[in-house]
Image (cartoon, rainbow, N blue to C red):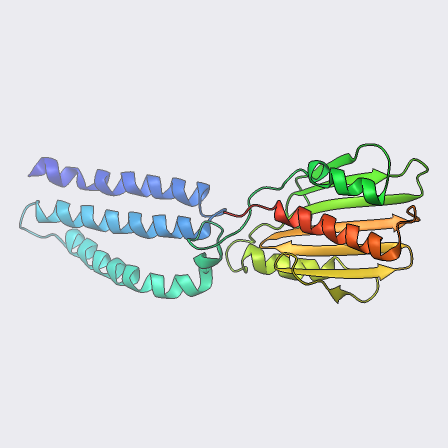
Length: 251
């Protein structure tokens, strides 16, 4: 009996140490996972504490009575916590939530756009530009320039990351971010490209962009490109955009 009673503090201390590690390593990045682990470990602590008391001496001290009351209170809080936490934490917005189809990586824009880029800006190979610290998450771009430097074509992917607890989903954020990418004149919708797509033209600058899930794809053409006819140029821009969107993989 004495050995079991003395093991009570150990049964509580070990799970609490694990609980602290979970809080430090998981809750900040994936709050819903961390909170689920916290609730599970609290329940484990309570169960172990109750078992240690049930197998102990029948005589109940004031300390053990207080511990029992505390356990009852924690069990009540544990029952209510999911009702209070889930609407606030909104784990269904997390990328790991079942049924969410979002992307975790980006295609290589230089490979994706190589063939179509030649129709818009004849010249050498594209120049890659990758940034892991973009405004919303990682970006991957490729730029082509004609030999005279008079025109420039850029294909860019933007991966929009999940904002975490209290934020919307990555797809919601990408929807808002897409609207912010248009700084030229009025935009007009493009049909049949990704989840949504738009075009904006202003003088010699042309911008088409689309979104698939949490990835934004942009094609920007500026300067004075060699003349394909206007209709052919627009068709090539939109073909490049459509091809780039098709290379976005969701999980």
